[in-house]
Length: 113
Length: 112
Image (cartoon, rainbow over the protein chains, first blue to last red):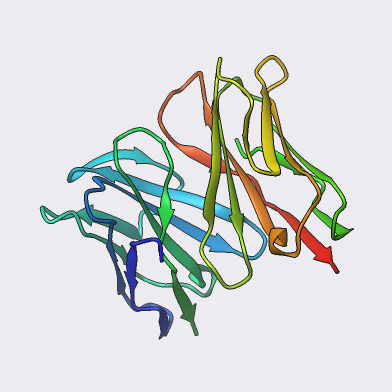
């Protein structure tokens, strides 16, 4: 158990809908990262937050947004969903702002039908 | 830019050695290695920083050639538990934007 909690574990939704994925980092970790994993693309970095502020941005679509709340949990919002958004979404956390050892949650598997 | 990992997949017998390579076209500040077992989350193995030393843990070690922008992961006397997909993640020295870009992974399967 990495200490990072993601909910829900599975999500099935229709195209055009909006979903919210939730992540609780390890106790004491201030950084939260979001990754998308699909079969042919490996782990795609989406975005990083550190202590409530956006720190780094990857190839995150405009339809996607995220935030980190004062209690350090984070949410990833995916809207106007398309079939191609089906993937495993991982959240990871680390202690500081710089890239050090990151601990991954078990992921949320999103299926868009 | 996504680093390139090689080989894409490898099958070994227990006790054999394996080398997984990771190369980038950009100057690197750091290389991160993770292992992901099927159906599980990636697990951290090690980080190699520019100017740092080769790292190792038991029978898994890695090197970082800064001049060639390459890193290699060495698995010695592989065990069944080493099976999984290995990802390298690289952080660019030029941008230092703290983004880690992962390769597509190397699938390692250890046979008894």
